[in-house]
Image (cartoon, rainbow, N blue to C red; front, side, top):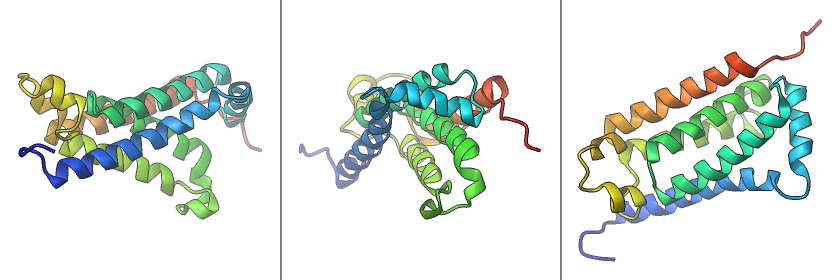
Length: 174
């Protein structure tokens, strides 16, 4: 580590990489062993129509947003993807189960979304592609602080809500 580095930057690296690769692992698993077709059927069953499209989009977004958040590239945008993914998952799959993960609740979804927003707020740190590519850029302030928080939160919520409005067609209950 050079003299300009800090424990905070190193901690952010550890946190960002762990968070990002956790999300990426969820996306990767769908591309192995024919799981994408099973996932498509599952998406259809929970009302996300068409299921085949959502299986591909969800898996691709989990994989790419996870890797790019881990790398710290355009961090608020990939944090927004976490928020959108977790909002849709929490609402369509976990909301009826309560809060706690042990009962298949939405606790895990909340933690991943909030953790991603926190990273967007404090910034990706010195050991990131944001720092490498944009440290001297005039728009650096958009990659963290209140702008990072706002972009991650607003774009994430808007993305999740847009998915519901365009594609969520749950079966009618009797």
